[in-house]
Amino acid sequence: QEQLAESGGGLVQAGGSLRLSCAASGRTFSSSHMGWFRQAPGKEREFVAAIASGGGMRYYADSVKGRFIISRDNGKNTVYLQMNSLKPEDTAVYYCNKVRWGSASAASDAWGQGTLVTVSA
Image (cartoon, rainbow, N blue to C red; front, side, top):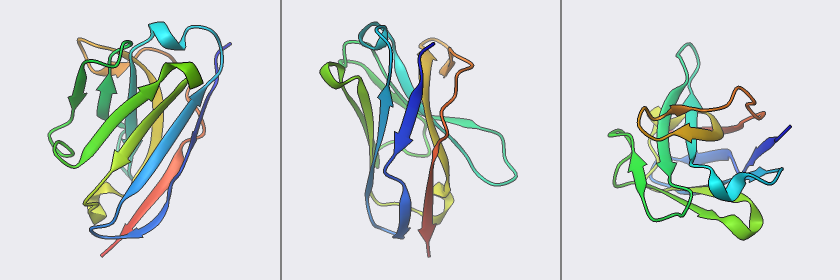
């Protein structure tokens, strides 16, 4: 069973930057579309960004477009989320997962532990 391990979260002031990493086990990473999701306290988990298996196509939620950049390294089985110009509303636990491209939804029930991002005003 494939596992996902997110890392890179922390505390940052508004306007700052962080880079999140998601390391995937298993042999299917390079053929899977991948994405990032987040869940703020008291809210449902929501889509943030997605990248196609080959890395050429990217898609972002309107709330992060122009500020966040998703990338991947198939040789390392890792997907990244570069977060710039962070806002307090970005505060959430961030998760990665396989993505159904057409619906921007998670394709697997095997969620990782997530990594907490806290943005102070």
